[in-house]
Image: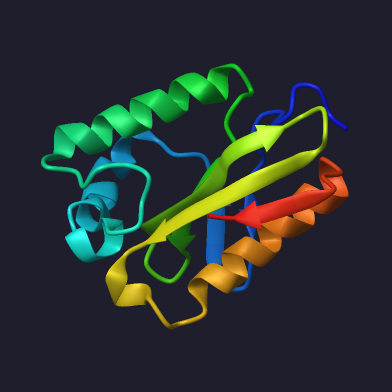
Length: 138
């Protein structure tokens, strides 16, 4: 298994999606879904009350990228170039080689097969590249 766990958090591509690191310019797109109480109902984090909450989330994630400690990807719809969600490892156990994957998606994209497409690509990475034994979805 790679050390550190998420060496540079690689970028991935699927038929419709680009999965890439978050950037500061993603704040408005993140706020667009993170302010929606229906989207955040089952999240482990609070609904964003303002764009500053989204900027703080990005800053937190950028800090984790610098330590190779973040496996978080922005979900970009290639057709529009817009960030429509995020998925990533919310917990990982290096010793036992398992992780928990969490995700969030803008409500207008629910039911369109976006998340299975994104999760499938990250599972390939999890099992083939970093050789996890198990991945749970939160």
